[in-house]
Length: 406
Ligand code: T4K
Image 1 (cartoon, helix red, strand yellow):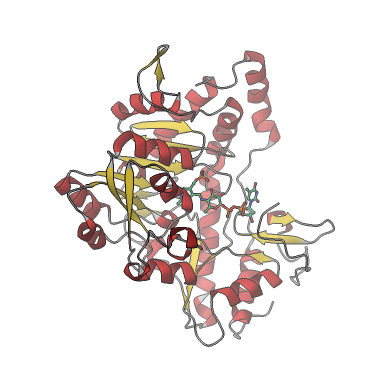
Image 2: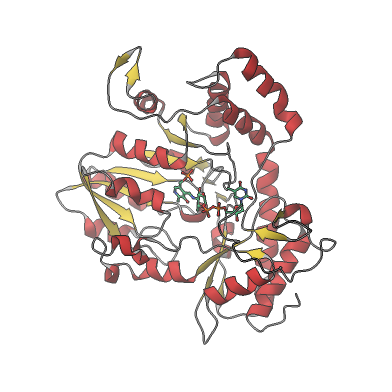
């Protein structure tokens, strides 16, 4: 069960007849349910059964098996990247990518992300993280990156937050000018393209998450993308640093098992439909929410509609500018009272986590703090019905004392 539904009160939402009950995560028995921020894309049992049977028959279940290799090949083509290795999750992808390409020294990292982005930098003495602010659009500020560069800087870590692309051209120019590694945390970016180019082709390496909550998933999983020639080192690193029975470098266990690869193959067959369904939800929100006329509610239509950009609709972040007694928490609470689990990704971020108080100058990252305190991600996934969207819109209206009629 999700961690965000400890409250046992009954959602006061509409009945199962007028919302898409299939989209809802049941809780506590009966017909009570939550409309969750996302819902995993899952294959039909019939679609995976023959492949699972085959895995069992082969008795080869991990260590770069048949289905892992098949999924890697299909993902390379689907995502439009030259090099791709599957790894066990998006966090290990980051750990491996940093170890592979960022030399010891200072690493400039965004202040607005999930802990997976910076944890490895703090957990390894070879790096000194330097946390810099974002632009109001949630992505790392290239000017802040440039200002933070010292003779000890060796790398930059940027995040395409919510699948929205960073200023890749500016970051590439900075990295090249100063001879720095540039790693993109592209955890949210499966299928995103800008000007016909996958986001996974930017930077020295990019990392993806294929967690159940992502647009494309292998239950748990992830990938690292880069050039084809970079993959040899990553394949060794994924396998303890071993090659042909010799230890040729350092490494970890980042391998993926065959069952998860099977889920990935089946999900790949249906992911385009899932992204299209997410797109319908996003565009319904973009159409219906402004009609509520709520000044404090900031949407991001440009992020979904810019020229040359193919979004994946992984998240639908809205921003609540605090006004009077209404703020992000109020909205989240009212939504929850109606059975809708919106999530404040990313709160806490590094700026408001006491663990990092000694390491982060909070005065230097006002945009990341503001974003962390104001953003709420509304439910968006492939199973949501028009009635689900209408319910969310209606409750948002009610939360702001507007025209909503939940
Ligand atoms: N970089 C970035 C920028 C990231 O956002 C992340 C992960 C990573 C790196 C690391 O990638 P991984 O190592 O995870 O591959 C979720 C995910 O666990 C996490 O992958 C994700 N980002 C983060 C933003 O969100 P939670 O704690 O919010 O997940 P949870 O369990 O509360 O699930 C959210 C909702 O999804 C639930 O309310 C219901 C639904 N759900 C979830 C699961 C797991 C289901 O319906 N079924 C399920 O099986 O962290």
